[in-house]
Length: 181
Image 1 (tube, rainbow, N blue to C red):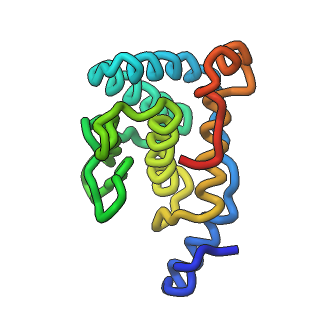
Image 2: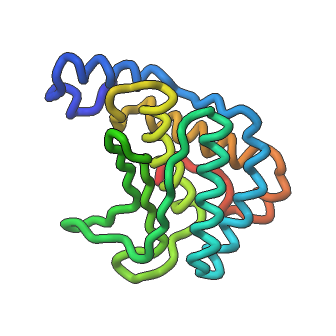
């Protein structure tokens, strides 16, 4: 069932929306190769080490783009999330003709200035990566937030978190996948 804004879309946009909604999984080959980056990212966040967070996030996204055989995207990790009328911006994907696509993510909450939880940061980063994959891999003319989009996001998270190694998830409950950011 489409989200409420579907009825306001043009016929061409509805076609893209439905195509996006129909793709439920990301087939990330050799996802296990990127799994060692997750504890590095988690530790960098726990230590509030901006440089290490930026390096680990960049390495993870670069690995995904290489495995998916799509153009690279630059990753910028910023400090405190900007506020928007009662909410906070978690991440932003931008692409412009003739320029390298860019992902911006923030590592601190706007309200309290605290470092975000690992799982929240990871899901936000992968959410923005999925926008890139919508354009670069799936060749959608737009990247809508559809049920299929969120299903693909969860698919990507699960593959990177892996059903194994179980020891990593058992000792770090925060590494268990969830359904929403």
